[in-house]
Figure 1 (cartoon, rainbow, N blue to C red):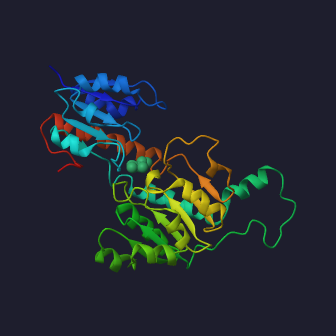
Figure 2 (cartoon, rainbow, N blue to C red; figure 1 turned 180 degrees about the vertical axis):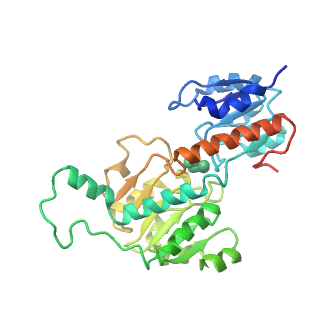
Figure 3 (cartoon, helix red, strand yellow; figure 1 turned 90 degrees about the vertical axis):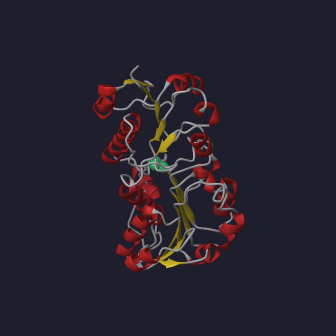
Length: 321
Ligand code: DGY
């Protein structure tokens, strides 16, 4: 019997063609709406491979549903939606999509930092609302980025790529990570700094840490209170690393000056979300890696990982080694 692969979102035919040539392949037929849990469960019962999105909860019930599942290829670098322990218990390989998204995600993170610091959303809206009556000295004045201090929390590959961009802006670079990275310090002039010190010293605090049991709820009101009143907080990792209610409080009480957010505790956020009412917040719909080139590369990497596992070869990017 030919192996069966199920893909949880509609992906371009050209990208999945290599799978189709060798395996039976089915795909959820929407690009925008996640596959319902019961459909995914029914598919997992018969699948040898699943190509999943970060919106799919790949929990133990799913991983243990069938006898044949050998690989979950998750189309993201983060894999907090996958129960890794359970996958390993059932001998299922979990693959992610690192490297191919590093630069695009760093670009977006830095763009969000710049847009928040320079109030670009407010300014663009100001023009569209026909409020621009004259040039004036402090009209929509934001904050400088160059020569300021950036504090990167989570110095993985994306963190490094953000640091590289910050170096180009003559920024002073602090970082906090599980362990120091002397090579990065040498190459980019970044300085390892204790978390509490980093949040107190940085003008821009950029959260790029993966979501784990240790980083969940890392940014609370106590942490925001330690920041400068002029600080700008950027989150491009995962929403639950931040206590959103505390962030709202910090922004409304003036504990910090602004926030640029690409991720949220619960996604998608509704238009009634309190953070969306704030002028000093720029909110994006989790588009860190969203360029045509990068998303295509991520899909392709998932396809290659599935092919490798089903053909008995080592996958390119295995998470549960
Ligand atoms: C990831 O890959 O984890 C990103 O959040 C997707 O854009």
